[in-house]
Length: 133
Length: 287
Image 1 (cartoon, chains in turn red, orange):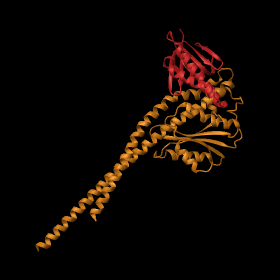
Image 2 (cartoon, chains in turn orange, blue):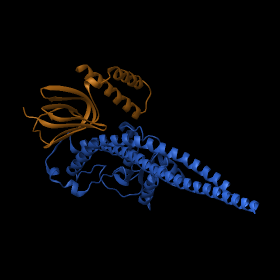
Image 3 (tube, rainbow over the protein chains, first blue to last red):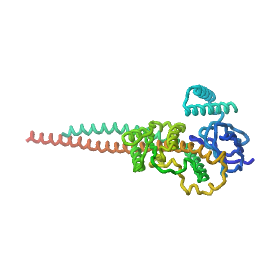
Image 4 (cartoon, one colour):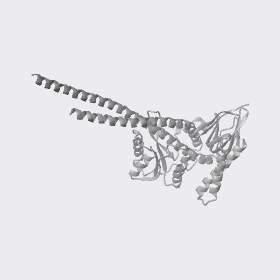
């Protein structure tokens, strides 16, 4: 099976570096699947999952922010935060979701509201990904 | 007289010894911090290399685009972000970055955002408007800490209150050399030679559009650059401190050696003098 080189980096570590058969990643426009020999492509990432298929298995990670870039040399996913499904502390994510929800019920400035909203989305995403495995 | 001299020297030796203890301890602390800071720099580098690489490619494809981030404007007010240390005793580290910043700012109408306690103290004493201070964040810096800083200057830039943004930081080149640098953050400018490479001419698909992707990625890029600069500066600070303290310990050691020598000389001189006196006295008694 043909593969392509995939690199996933975050600000504090190199998350994945190797050959992949296929990935599915959530961009701001929706889920996008990338196969080998994809045309050059750049998109910003939303809050969602990243599924990597390699060596016959698949692994799921929770991703928020950043971008994906496909070029002839390979594919790079540059994420603000990224963690494997089995690394997620689901209790912490649930607590974060509760906190964000409670915050959203209060009177907030527009910016504070946005921040809480994003926090809630991130937490929900992590809970979903962690439950998916 | 000799005895008084000896006492004085002994006191000097004691005081230099206790100073040496402090500098030695600081050296050890700094060298363990340097190691951690260096690891952090190395871990973050792939991220910034990728970030920079992508942004230059997109900038090349978006050359004619009139994105607010790239369009040069008439400069009325310049904003400088100055990253310095939280503590002193780091050799020329703090002084060097301020010297560079002052040279860069000369003749401009400037505003400053400071990162680090030393920068805060430095600019509080100088005339000029300090917009914000962020002391004591470098050691435990996480990328999420940069968001509020980036948003602040991005807002100012978008509202037109500042027309260009510069970042002064210290690049960690090697344990022996740290280089103060000043880079332009906004409006974005990339060297021509970098954007004219072959790769940039490959037709790339942007989802949903180059402008939208550009506007998403720029804040990401600024966060990344700021984080990188803080991490590099912190490593430089620790490295500079380690070097300064190493030199101080060496000097103290040398000083103690010299003082010991003069102490022994003084001691010998006083003994010789005593003997001379005794011999002279005995001679008188015997005659």
